[in-house]
Amino acid sequence: MKLKKLLCLSSVVFASVFAQAQHLSVTEQITTYSQASVSLHKTYLPQWIQEKAEVCAKLSSSSVPSEAQQCQADIATFAHSVLSCEHSETRLQEMTKYDDELLNGMVTADGPAQIPANIQQKFDKLVQVAMKNHRFAGLLPAWSLTAYVSKVANAHAGANGQIFVSSFFWSENAVFTPDEVVAILAHEIAHVIYRHSVKLGCMAYEWVATPGLGLKEASLYFREDFSQETERGQAWSRVSQSFELEADRGSKDLLRQAGMNPDLMEQALLKLRPKNEGFSSGSHPDFDKRVLNVHNH
Image (tube, rainbow, N blue to C red):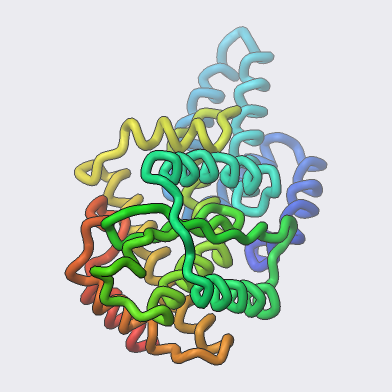
C-alpha cells in the first residue's frame, strides 16, 4: 500500500496498515515509517530515526552484526509505537488513568462541589449530541462531570470524557450565566472529541524518545524538562494553543448542534478574559485571539 493512501486512512485502518508493514524487511519498515513521520509532521521522530540509523550503520561496519540488527529492530518498533499512538486503545486507557489521577487529585485537594441541576442537565444533553454527531473509534468516552471548590474560573477535560469544572462559575461572585458555563463545558467536551489529551501524551512520548515508556511516564519526564524558552517548549505551546482554538470552534459547533446559541462561547470568553489566572502556562492563546477565532468560525 502506497504511503499517500496510508496517510489518508482513518484510525480504524491504521492497525491493518501496520500489520502489513510487519511483512516488510526491517530496512523497508524503517524507510516507510520515516516517510510517514515526515508526512504526518512529527516533530522529532524523523530526526530520531536518522540519528539512530547512523548509529546502526556504524554497528553494521563493526564485528557485531547482531547488535546492528537489534538496533534496526529498535528503530522500527519505536517508530511504529509513535505513529500508532494516537489510534491505540491501550494508549487511550493509559492517558485516561493518568488524567484521572491528576484531576481527582485536584478535587481531593480543594474539595468537591455541588453542580447546579440545570447545568448538569444541559451537560448531559451536550454529551448526547456529541455521541450522535461524532464517531469515536474504539473505546467510547465514559462521560462524567465533577465540580471542585475553587475561586479560579477553570475547567479541565480528561482523555476519556472526564470533565472537571470549578465551582467559581456559579458562586456568588460569578458573572457567568448557566448557558455560558455550558458553553465552557462544550469546549471541554470538544477536547475529548478531538482526543487532545491523548495527542499531547503521544507527543511527549515521541519527544522523550525512550522506547518502552508509558504515556504517564513520558509526560512526567517531559514536564520535568519543559521550558517555554526551549525549542521543544515553544513547540509544545504552539500545539497546545492550536488545540485550545480547535476546542473553542468545536464548542460553537456543539452548541449549534444542540439547538443552543452558538455565540455563547464567545460571550463566555469575553467574561473569562479578565479572569485568566488559570491560563498562564503558555498552554492557551491570548483571549483576543480566541475571541476572534470563535467569532469568525
